[in-house]
Structure formats: C-alpha cells, structure tokens
Image: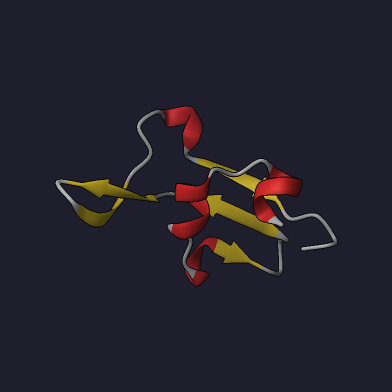
Length: 61
C-alpha cells in the first residue's frame, strides 16, 4: 500500500521502523532505506537530502 498510495521505493519501505511513524500527526518520516552493500543487507541514509522527508499518511494507511 505504501508503494502504491505514497510512491515509496521498496528499500524505503523495508527500512521503515515504528519510530518513523507518528500516528498523532499522521505522518511517516523516511530517514533510511534497506540496501545490499557488499552482499549484506544494511540500513543506510538516503543518498540525497530530498529523499529524506516527512510525508502525510493517507486515511487508508
């Protein structure tokens, strides 16, 4: 649903943790993504500043 409704990338979705979700403000903060680095899965910061963002959660989420 996050990919379809909010346009998030697979790595961003897999890198989500509960601390990124603010149900009171109805927002989600993208701070890291899951990527394969040297054959291992690693949580990394997004490559660009614009990839780090806070987005509103739609009612369906």
